[in-house]
Image 1: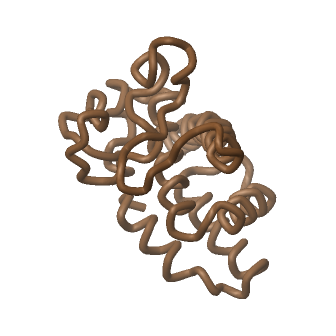
Image 2: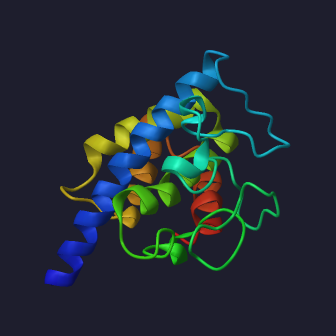
Length: 169
């Protein structure tokens, strides 16, 4: 039980990092301050600090699973392309909230691409209210599904499942 508690605590911290990155980039893209071409990997966090994504994050938030784009380096996972749950504790070479947060941020960005910004914002925000204390990635996935039932009558369940399944959740 202690191991699960520690895992959930690290995952909850990783989601905290991911939510702040995701909400910030969602806002910047919506305001036209950050480009997001759906055919390119171009949503780079911290690009204005002079160092680009490799200073604080290993990949752009919009790296799809299996991508061959140069920017989708795979961090320390040993593979290229966007991250999946299987990459937990491998992105930065061990469990770490910033590195593992990239998994959750990329998952939410993919969900945003599938459902749109407003719908995803609604679901993610509502899910935070519905999730248990110290949630795991799976707990939050489930809370997003419950939020979809509460807000949209479950209309987006199939799309939500497809996104999470593609990211190993």
